[in-house]
Image 1: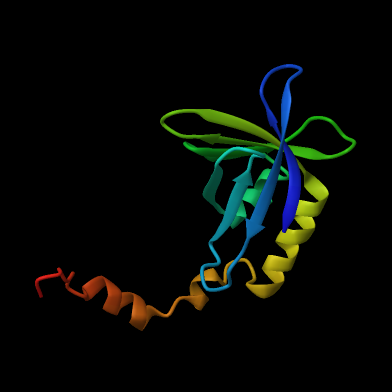
Image 2 (image 1 turned 90 degrees about the vertical axis):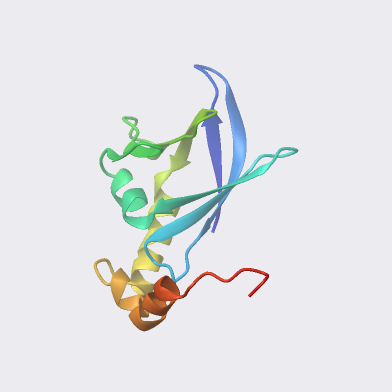
Length: 136
């Protein structure tokens, strides 16, 4: 899903950003969020699906990713703060389209059923596989 959001640069300064939200039933715990700045780099974040969902209604997250609803009533928006070692960014996101999209993802993989999608035999084999080098 593509969504136009705004990066808050200051009290009266904002930058339009295109955000691409991606969900895969094979990896249902996280949503890929690619931030596209016109003329700038593409930045990809993996954010917990439940964190995005909860952040539309109440403050959630810690560390690098935090989200909370805006106190304004119309149009309903939420704040998403992303922090890395180099910088922090605050984005304002429209609630309705994100909420509708998230509901579709929960239709594909219901809340609480995410780990049911994991193939544990393959996961265990990957964990137990000895790393190989070019000389093997």
